[in-house]
Each structure stands twice: as structure tokens, then as C-alpha cells.
Image 1 (tube, one colour):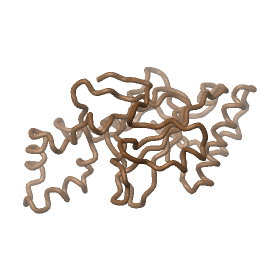
Image 2 (cartoon, one colour; image 1 turned 180 degrees about the vertical axis):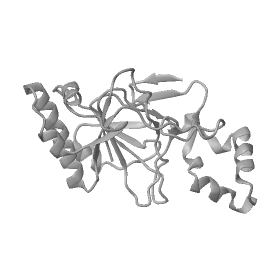
Image 3 (cartoon, helix red, strand yellow; image 1 turned 120 degrees about the vertical axis):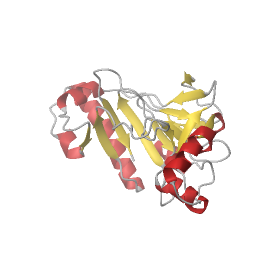
Image 4 (cartoon, helix red, strand yellow; image 1 turned 90 degrees about the horizontal axis):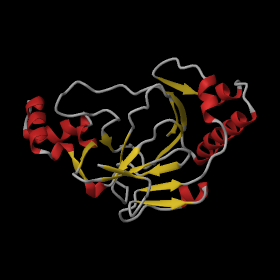
Length: 232
């Protein structure tokens, strides 16, 4: 696999928040990126926050309590504004101070945690928004460069053995256990890295969605470094 910062034919770059939320997905484009260069010291914010668990939810009130330098205040205002505009839009943004996600080691033949390439499924037609302010950032895998894991013969056979039920409800079993959400990169796939400071909008899996859902994964964290991530 190769990682690129270029969006290519799978993503579209926009220049404002209004363009980010008002532009429709179409064709092979199932992700939008509001590219912006953020000023401010986001590392200072991380240094002043207290990690309570591997993933700690940081509220606006938590941010406002921090005593920060001028550059730290600039970073805080950026985050607070992002939280506010997304909330006004009708989304439910969450700011996470992140050491690491929980790993899935239940099965040795299929990985189903967020470090695996996956799509998000929603009961309503809503998009996923992501922004990494500090730390390692996620990757996108173009749909035509991916294979659904449940279609890989050796994995499918092991899932059938795990199911131990009738063929009629096998597909339901795959959905109920979220196996169908995960993908394997094809050889020589070209990944798109989401970068720092960019606000992304990703298409989800929903019957009314007009494009394929965006395949993405969480990054392996850098040693000794927390991530500061907005997600909704």
C-alpha cells in the first residue's frame, strides 16, 4: 500500500464549511475535505488535559477551564468554533483525547476494530465528520481498491463455520456482527491520508445514500503521542 495526501478522483476539496455540508456526493466521490491551515498550539491543549481512560471525551467546558498561552487560546477557539458550527448544522460532535482504541483480538482470521478498514453504517442518512488536530491521522481506502472481507473465500468459510446456522440467515449474521463493514486493501492500493487540521465529511452506509460508503481506518498512534480528534 502507498499513502498519498492527494485526494484524486475519490475526494473533493472544498474551501469553506458551507461548501463542505452543501455539496452532494456523486459518482466515485464519497468524501469531501475542507483543507485549511490551522494556527495555534494544539499540543499545548493536549498537555493541559487529563487523560482519564484510553479515550477521554473533552467538553467545551473542559477546554474553557484551561489556562493557555496566546497560541493555545487560538487553537482552543478553532476547536470551539468547529464544535459549534457542527452542532448548529445538527450533528453531534465529540472531541476525544485519545491514547488508543480497543483492539479486536477475538478472531485470528478477521480484524473488526477501527484499525481495520471499514465503513460507518447509520440508521439515518447522516455523514461522518472527522478532524485530527494533533497526532496521527486516519486513512481512506478507495472503494475500487478494496475487497469486502466477507467475500474473501478463506475468511467466508471460517465465518460460516463460526455461524453454525442455516444459509438463509448467514447474511443477517454477518450484518448483526458487523463483519460486512470491513475491507481488505488490494495489492498496490493508493491510500489517502486525512492529514492534520482538515475537516472531512465521509459518506456512510445507508439505503438512501447515492454513493458507496467511504472506507477508512484509524491510524496506529505514534509512540508516546496522544491524538486530539473531533468526530461525529
